[in-house]
Length: 412
Image 1 (cartoon, rainbow, N blue to C red):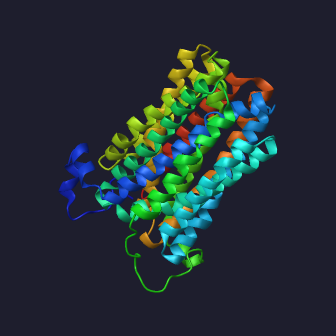
Image 2: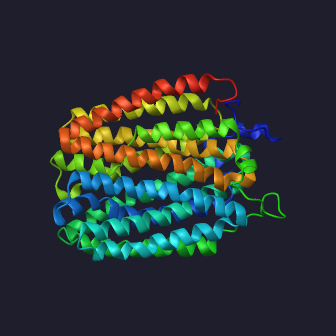
């Protein structure tokens, strides 16, 4: 497969600048971006404080944090296969996705009420199940709405706005923690508000396009349907799994920041720094992925992740830790929207929900394994070993990427 996006009759429009591309994006892409932003504000108000809440208030271990984070994120990714397939079968992506956003919003009060690690785990699973339900149909909806020649830019914009929420959430967490004198539960209650707003905006602000292909829906998980996904799509699935194995839960960035001597109320600024960089880089790299060799971006993204792990492993001062976290954000900006766009490029339009679901099923298993291993390394050998291991996995992923990328017909 070529390293360029699919042929478009208006190929000259690919030469439009980044600002011009923004003006060409449909309104639905912008609304979906703001929906993601609001839900991420809600989620990150909680998630930026949750590892510290579990360790300092509930007495959880780093291994328990790693297990809960890995299980929660892995569950979210695994659930996507079912919601994505359901959205293909029904031909209704919006209703499935909105229900996932609603479940995520409903989970937020449980964190404020939690008095044990078990209840936190339950709330985290409900929250991530909601994410799993909404994510694959939403990504397929972005692919349905976006013009083919601006698909990378569309995913980049949605990811960028999503990440604006991911840094506003921790920033608000810092403000409220200082205001309410480290009252975790009060901050968790605030998270309910943007979660509800996100559901309402999606429900009333997004218009779903006509069903691709129309007519009677076929079974998207039949052997015939899965066979239509093709080798190029499964190559992208393999690459996504390798990337996930090399990058464990961001909860360990928060714990590393605490080790760097950052006061508890200021620790969420670590996630602010990471997500500011992520937000600033996601759209430019998404737009560039429409115009350049995507293999190069994937490889450079792994190099950046390796550098981030090495800095976080070696550094003990807060400034060094922030530098490592910023590099982590650059890696995310380079790779996450690109991988989402690659799924859209390689999957048939009527199977996009299923394609995103299976992509995330494989990545979910990888995320669970990576986070549990990271938690065990942290407990048994300390934080530096955890990040050195991440650098080693990144290097192994880089070595595995090049031979696959060079195979004829498998280049994204």
